Image (cartoon, rainbow, N blue to C red; front, top):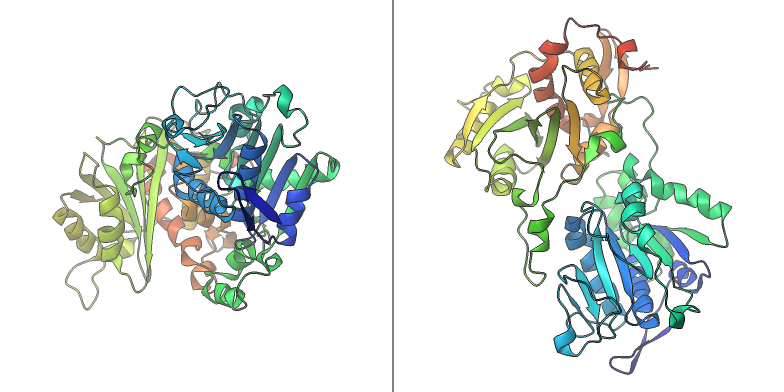
Length: 503
């Protein structure tokens, strides 16, 4: 395909794969592309931005991400790279976060009141960066088209309210433009339950083939990848499941009999970034991730930190908040990194701005044990590290672990949210992606003392250990220690939990 960059009056040849070409020539206005890593989503995204801007000068478009943090970390870098493929360059053909009027850029039909979340093109076209975690970021828009990357992460209800209802603008000069009112969303296949809406669009496309195209492609569709790349990706993949999902675009199988049976993405996952802080970040400078980007944290209250020890070390950070138990953040390190690295490299830098420097420390009962080559227990080792960094630590881990059956009944009651003695569990989905996958994929089985968590994933070398049950144990410990006494002695039964049945 030959692409002309009107700014420089030069011709550049861009070779496209078959899926990319199909999207380029597709007559449908609405396009959903489920594509593996390496299948060319960046090229598709960059070309659609180029086509929209050149075909509708001075028009406004919505570019969507689930959060502004996702926009900064994934969507914008991908868009910039994709546009460069077609000869359009940042600070020359377009600017980000400011008006280009002083550069001689034309102004859009409806100039925004603020430019911090705007991509302004030389011909006056603008892309407004809409983050769905900010209910006001899409309000008041009159857009001519919409597009989004990592679409499996998007909340469909918020997408409808903040973006789709704004895609209504029209101008007489654009009435013959095939992209007027169009929408395009690209994504790799979802690996968690949250992305089900995107998968469901395939059925709608089959029912409305003249209006909607749903295209699936793996990295195998890209002939321009190195011959050894697939072997390298397979050898380095954390699991066969992740390789199949990320590279081959094969949807993971669902877990039917989960230990966290009442876990519901629509109820228990939330997003709460400090967008005022994030939107003030200079796009031309590097960004250091810290708890300042989070709005769900009480900076004047202690942090609950729960650990799971071993070759794979991880911690889950939580806080009770009114009637909620909020899971704020999770961290892990793998061998050869050690327990010390989990705190020195991960936890301490992230929470350096926290004001109440107090930690309530939980974990497995093995944290109280001393090993032959050490005079300290694991909890004492962690306490010394945190104390040296200015934290006060209270070790609250119980010396005896609750049974799996007790955990199952208690946590599922907390997830169900009908027991007034238990706080509702809420999980920050963007700060806990691996924990969420571990919770969703944790299986239950019948044991001698009732329901047990199937821990076989911890011995499965083909499974990434951040998606095994280690994380789920760290998740369990503080909730059980804090609330099990309230729950024991009550009518704790399967019927009380809504008829959970383990087959």
